[in-house]
Length: 176
Image 1: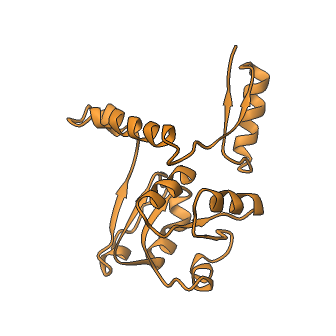
Image 2: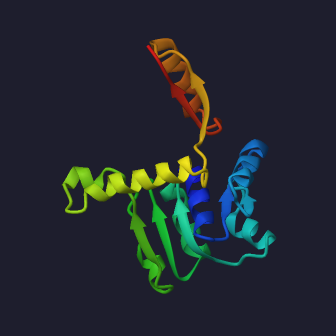
């Protein structure tokens, strides 16, 4: 999600600060258009200070909401906005956002279909728009590898690689 998020933020003409810890993932983020890449294994506040940024206007959280909750509250600018796609396991203290009047929102791709919302068709329209952006080469897919046969061994192998947290981009299993 972060890889596509970087590209969409750049299309919106935002200055993008991505987080990555390994050299290859830092370069990946830069290649996708990130203006800066900071190391999420270090203090994000310190990393932002190093690039001359005190606070940010927007945060798209694609990682660990529980782990980063207080950090996000600290680095978000007054009247900023935070969006997370990652569930939390502990209750989130929304009061820490109050004094800054920060907006917080969840994004979950299945909400519309799960609850049969009145705007359910907009999900398809959104996916079609992303497909057009890819077709018009305004953003690129994150596909980095196709494993040419779906079977139990390849499924286990690919799953293990993805679970390691060390893959770059997306892997597709294709063909029976």
